[in-house]
Length: 310
Ligand code: ZN
Image 1 (spheres, helix red, strand yellow):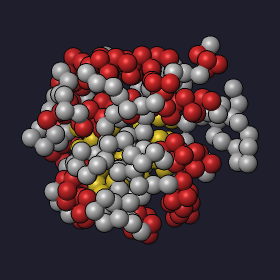
Image 2 (cartoon, rainbow, N blue to C red; image 1 turned 90 degrees about the vertical axis):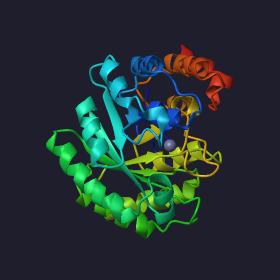
Image 3 (cartoon, protein in one colour; image 1 turned 90 degrees about the horizontal axis):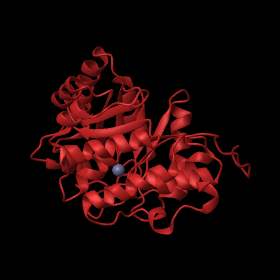
């Protein structure tokens, strides 16, 4: 299939990183047993996801849902070619991630002081100092290291986040050794015009850098934001199977972008993902069973358009 041509041609293929096992499950009241998480991660890889965020190395008292991440890494049957990653807030977590066998480690910090304090209980400068330590440790272990900048499109506490601030923090993260920066719309405040403004400004400042977007759909704009980014040639996105999760530390913030909704739209437009959509739908159904409730994704309710299944 070739990409649709329209006012602006879309990229022929995009890479999706699945964040459901981490960003999704950490926002659930139910704490899944390690064996269930293992089934989820393995089923996602079987459905064609080639990058999976498996868990987080954070304090178990802060995020009990992620307490077994090391055990999970130890039991998952790894599919060749799949990157099984973890996030960590500091060098202690990064050390545990490397020891557990994470293929890649991701640091995270927020663009605003208030969100960073709320999320990790420290200032942005302290988080940047942690990133420096983590970068050295992870890269000397020979693993890829990248960083996500949360609330890059708006902050639930501070509102508008200046693009200049986002760019400055991206520059510092890249200087500290992050191979890639992911911009997070942590509470779903982005809209298509803002996405294009931020992506354009990022490209102008860092013309040779790959950019990944972690978009949410808390206010329904997630897929529109994806389309806005695709039009500018962004080809790397995060999403969560079933649309579960979001940021548990921000008020009113459910709404990770749903992987099967994203894949459905992309395939309809002729943009390849390498993902087996019917298999992914099965994973989402299995997840509903594990969680004991419906997932927020929409394709699981409406079904796959017939011409995409055959
Ligand atoms: Zn998220």
